[in-house]
Image (cartoon, helix red, strand yellow):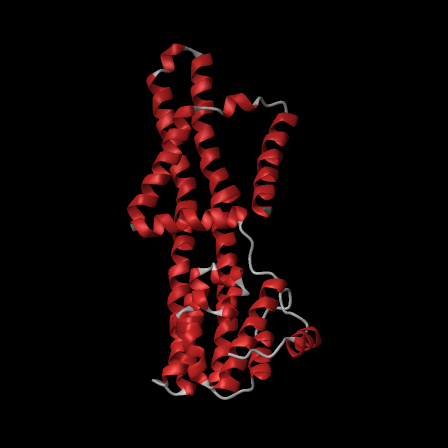
Length: 288
């Protein structure tokens, strides 16, 4: 939601300052300049982007505007869920985890954490990490490398929208100059129409330069940076899963594996050690 507040402040400060200086906001409304600048920017995006990345840009933009990153409570629930899973594996053997992993929709553990299971990426990452532990197809000390490889692939994929938005943002000032030059050409062609008409056309041309710079540094580049922060938050969540599952696969006790994952978190979202330990110890022991 902060992104919407920030966008409002950018618009209010720009138009407010212009009006305080005696300007009329209506003189900035030149449809031709908007068509050139945003049309060319859209064309640049289409040229530079595969179709699936454009869809991802739309998704990431909506997420940045209206979504929320993982909170401390979300991590608290994640660590509790992981502890439950590990306790089943420790008490009943790894084979007891098979029914939870193969049929997560029927799992009593996962049903208690609907917010986690509703996120397909997080759910798949956890299941892909636990399956090799159950199957015994790889050594425990190799599991973290396997999960790290998957994490790196997701990080690279998530960075594609950021790079493309930065490309558009860096291009917009140049596109604004193109729009301004087109306006000047139009002005020169009608210079015989008199000073009033020429002045209006020059103002329209300068508006093109303004719009390009304003859109780039006021909106597109900040949006790309916000998506980058959101991606880092998503990566931190998955890395927390990696640390916990990797530690459990190496033989750490469930409480210790969860503590390793807790310590990997940023302080702003990290649950307290005593608070988490007391909550885990107070949980009823899962039978299966």
